[in-house]
Image 1 (cartoon, helix red, strand yellow):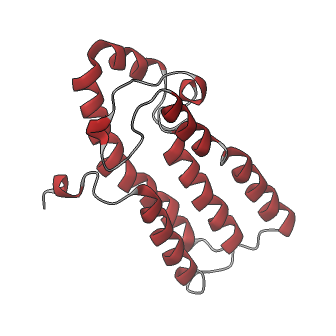
Image 2: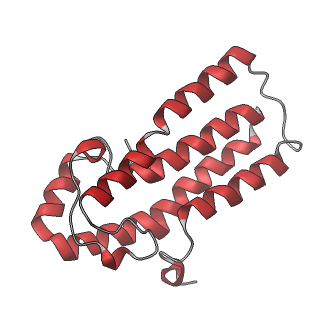
Length: 154
């Protein structure tokens, strides 16, 4: 099956919500992890702290007057490499992953961790790799240098 027809078709927040709903359904099928409540809440707090990077990433795209739409990548007119983009090339996707990971900690069963793993696989294959292909074609050596310096996720 040719996956290219799915590239940039489904907005990543929708993928995250669908996986979160699936994780909630799986919660009752898997064994309890037996996490102590402090660990659950501590992990959620860490994920919540990292969750700020998504809105900051959006704000930096707006400030640069370029498109941040994951379904309309061809509208990108500026390569944003400062601020939070010095830490990760994909802060918005990282924020969604952190939200799913926090949700997995809250649900507290092993099987629900399939959600964050599926999110990484989906977003990497159907969003990030096609975006990188476009950015290499559009921004050439500038993007290649940025890509060599900053990691895809963290």
